[in-house]
Image (cartoon, rainbow, N blue to C red; front, side, top):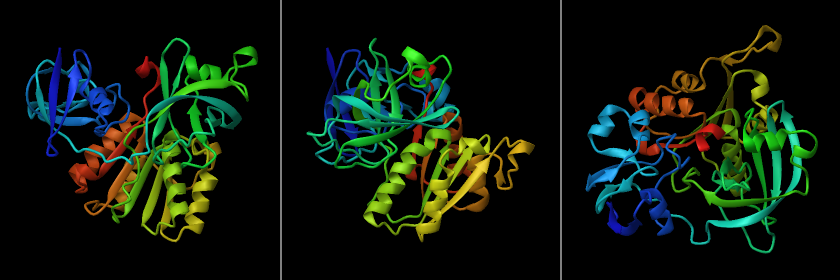
Length: 344
């Protein structure tokens, strides 16, 4: 049995097979709704059900505030229809040559830039151009079928070479392979299987609003891709990057961000550290990174925000920016990184 879903205000329609989620069915029908993690750990795919019945799953009750649930909001990556549905969601227009596909990928370089961060260069098949928006992610498909998602830290290139920033999660099936020793360690020339591109985290280039980039840890990766895309296209848009970490070493490409600030006339960079130790000799900003934004820019009503990193940071920024600084929720774009435990 299948059910029809009608999206408002576009009035586009698609079919959902029994047991399928609204998001998966929409993507299969080439209708792109906002989404990020696809496992119910963030709220990027939040939308409103106008009519019809569905199984929400347990995640919305943990992720969304009670007032949103009372108004009919849910997470479309979790919602499974039990009748025809009418939903309200903003559709995202994707270029026609951006197609999700599975492909082999060869590991071309491994560069450990911090104790727990590895930069990986992947060569995708060169004969078939891999098109994506800077900021999107791909998934590694493990031998047992499990998947791990990582944002691409480089914009599209003609040579189909992509860069990933991978943080080691102790005990993680995939990252233990990346950071392992001896026979268990990932090696240059190794072949992996990947699928992509995924996600709706990319710069809306049809806007000229000032941009606030907000990152924690390896949430810097997709923002790096976006900024490099801005450089390549000669964008003159006003932008500021706030990058937070517990200690200075967490800002593993600090020199690159500082170089952007020196060479891009409309770009600035604010590093923020939350748990500096005396031996770090840190003299910069301290505290939670999203609070630094609120202190510097108390009125965000005319801005767009692109936030990427730990779900707690993304959720706190979304809540506080909208409630305290006048940011439109429609202008908050996010990619919340989940752990391997979340993705099992």
